[in-house]
Length: 362
Image (tube, rainbow, N blue to C red):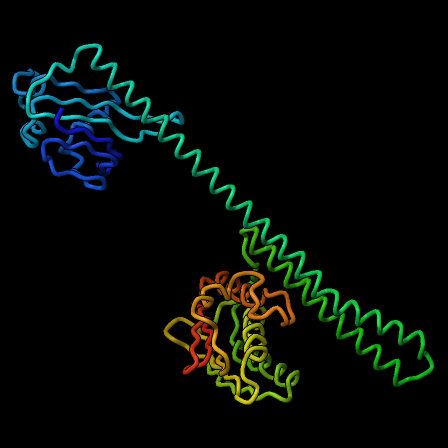
């Protein structure tokens, strides 16, 4: 036979997967034929092999359009069906000369080849599933190790502060100033640990595939809420300048608490990594039905080969920075839960800008 192929045949298309072409038929792997012009389509419909010895003299096929279209006399096509019942396609062969293909040995050979192809396909799929499972397990193991290491490191600091505060309370119980100082230290540490735990819970929800939960409501006060976030961070960082331009009004449908969290995380990131002598700029505006929130800072840019990793869990630009490295990951998950996106651009000339785009206009 001058031409043979393994073809993926569905109810809509015929695509060559592997080809042996000795006659210049012109088809290569990935090439397509019009499904309805092929006898493979008939084989799929009937789930029955077709063998033609001499098409122009065959009572059933001498007036069939396919032999005339492809100028063939002999033809063989057997179905390839996987063990789960899926119809994969066909093993087919054609030639311009007649051949005795309906002999039992020839039919048996084609059917055996089809069975071998089925075994190969299933072996390939099993290998792909195994490799995917191994990659998932490796990724889970790496995340688990990162989680334990980073969480252990970051929880140790506030716990140490709580212990120091408790010791100070014991030693200075009769000193009101010392008691107040110790109480404030314990309160700050408790808030810090609470924030870490909240981040861990949000991370777990995101990794489990359910995404970060949101409670969408109709609101016309998101702009005020975002101004409130900016004011809180100004208070927490009196030595830094935060310039805001928030121009959002009208009715929106979103979870305002989560969007406040998103802005808070982006601002905290900018304050942590931005140049201390230049302002951090916050902007919020409408772009069609989208609310666009931008946070910009000057300073050392994020390297180009790391910009795509900033939204990965446990990503931290330097190990010395505080935090679990979950803030930007949580931002991305909050945006995703609102059917939106968060992106980052960074260069020495233009600075670093994080942009959240949320389709939340009611």
